[in-house]
Length: 115
Length: 113
Image 1: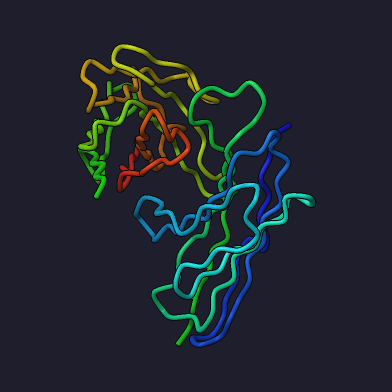
Image 2: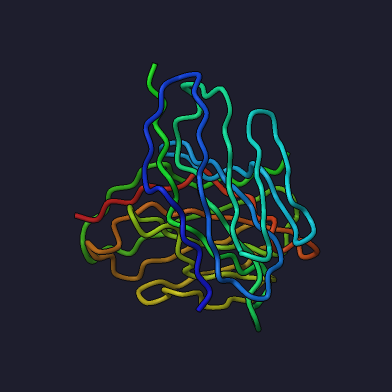
């Protein structure tokens, strides 16, 4: 069964600190993996996309890693800011026999940054 | 920039009403999707469409229907709204050549009382 699991479910950190969010997936065959940021009451916005051959990709203070062998990804946020408070969703595309554009969503990690 | 717009940010309807949620994208995308998002469950695919007048069921199509009469517009219809359809509804679109690169609208928070 194609699944995406994220941990932790929620996380509270102080402003300026770093944090790492985890994503494990069983989607096969694998196409790519995205991390989305979703602010409260808004639609998800893509942060990074990683294909099978990529290990690391950065977008400002966000760095995503991918280990396709163990089917794990992480999102590292450095020097957190209050505006980083949001839900972070791991999304994997692929799956055998899937029709166009099928995505598999994790349940998200709710990050809260305190001043 | 890709823009996906949804007709309402917040909507309150009564049980049994017919509800229309509209989604419009301005990037000439072939693919369009409707999801619902509930706390602790993540996004779940309701229906999607890869061409005008074409539609395919997602994981949770029961109680919903869709309409795609024009390429830029994809409507989600709740024939007889029920309280368990209270949720956040998100529309997304993608280009045929990059089906996984979906762009999301801002969402419609629907409450059925």
